[in-house]
Image (cartoon, rainbow, N blue to C red; front, side, top):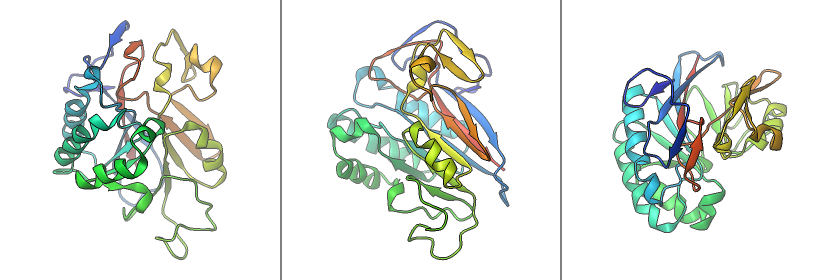
Length: 249
């Protein structure tokens, strides 16, 4: 892990309140058979709109400047209320000065409505992934699309590596069956309180939900689940807040 301030060390093993501690950059190397390497940063569960998530925007900016990704995907649960839309817009205006940003929605974003969230993203200079992705060497989707029925923006055969950016880890089985090589998800916050780990599973939450973990595989498909950047319930134990930097090769 790499701390967004640039210091290389392991997260503390105690309690954390809100978003006032360090944000960690979790780096994962994924072989997709890319012609040229690409660095994709997945940042989910910002939960802007609470006083304890105010540092999140500055932390994401610092992480992106530190690691210089080729693109950033905001993976849903971006705001917890309409009062956070201006903060989201300011964040996007700052981020998009040096990196393209795409966004999807999560369940908490339904409180403001998908159309209003999309408008805030576009007004801030970001792009809405459901409108289509023009990423060249990579195909990036926000919902599972069968390989024999390519999305309208990609007519004809499409042999680019297929990556699904979704909010929900429960999409993984369908994505693996549809031929996606990589799935990026969030939503679960790592359970927020972790008392033990085994084979990338986070306990006790993994006893309650099968997708409480860091990485899953099914055939040639992998899923990375982010522990997220912020929380509605602002307490964590041994569960560092993070963004996931995917080094695609």
